[in-house]
Amino acid sequence: MSAVEVLRFALRGLSANKLRSALTTLGILIGVGAVILLVAVGNGSSVQIKESIQRLGANSLTITKSTTGGGFGGLGGRAGRFGGARGAGGAGGAAGQQQSSGPRTQAHDLTLADAQALASGGEAPSVKSASPVVNAQGATATYAGTSATINQFVGTYPTYFTAANKTIARGSSFTTDDVASGRKVAVIGSSLADDLFGTVDPLGKQINVGGIQFVVTGVLEESGSSSSSFQDADSVAIAPLPAVQQSLTGYGGLDQIVVEAKTSEVVDAAQSEVTAILQQRHDITGAAADDFQVMNQASVQSAVGEASRTFTVLLGAVAAISLLVGGIGITNIMLVTVTERTREIGVRKAIGAPKGAILGQFIAEATVLSLVGGLAGVAAGVIGAQFTIVGVTPVIVPSSILLALGVSVAIGLFFGSYPASRAAGLRPIEALRHE
Image (cartoon, rainbow, N blue to C red):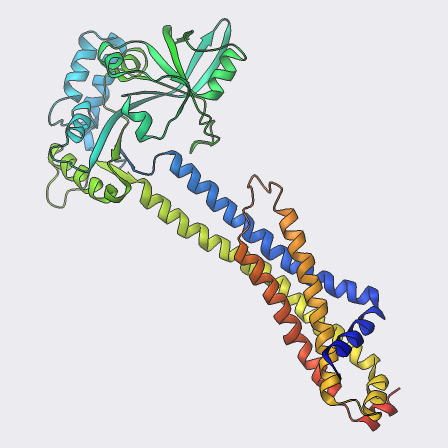
């Protein structure tokens, strides 16, 4: 008996019980579709996380004050900042700035002098730039009677835009001369621009922040991400460091120093150089704990990538269980089919049908069921991946389609082999006696 005839008999057997065949196929469909869709969701989540990290700058290092170091020295820096805020550039502010900008501060705050030392290039040849950063949280901006809360008002240098991967969509950033002169200019995020100005062009307009007028020179490109505190990352304003210190934060220590390495290949070298310089400046020797933390974006991205891959594999494994359940369903249905068609098998064997033909027919039936279910599952998974699921845009992994489809066919062969061998092993006389 040819392969075509075996397949024809298999299709005829399946069509005799259409509803049962359809339900069996549905189990495989759900399994294959779930594998493809859940792997796509896991991969999409990984892609979104990596994109969020890349927005911070692939070559950047973020230096912050350690939460475990510093001791009582931090009081001096905080007192200086408080004096600067109250004095608005007077004696208290000058004292605070002088204390925080000294070559070696007892306060162990990050200082402007620290940033300048990192950017000098002498001891840190792998460093391209070092941008001092102060943050004012929750400031309120107003324009023409409209007010909006700025989630983050950043005071920094022009090099910050490149280091933090901030792209100007309209207008321009401020300049080094603006920083030196302490000019009240600002680049604002897209959300803040929409909230304050609506359809009005914000360039050249003045916004009032804490009673100080800032001229808008540019608007940032929409980032489409949220900050770690689940706030809108596009509700931001970036201005020259002295302007923000004088108006909002005072002249205390820095909140961050954002360092940009010259290339992605020398990020680790830049981190080592930065650590050595800050340890020397902060008088940290021997086994003493650092009073600062250096966060390497590349290391964070690598760690997140590993976690995301584990998460994706876990999702795929959970979905694969439904494929196993579908395979067990095929075994069950094929055993029932063999029992129902025992007399038919006996008649065929009595008139000369070889054992291989009977075996091939039932294996073909199981394989057709799993193949049809697999193809339908692929279609369902691909269609489902076109929609956003729990805030994640699924990204299909082509290998998951091939793997799920291949496994579904293998399941048909594996789980259909026992019922098929049982049918082929029936003795004709016993099969003819079966009621």
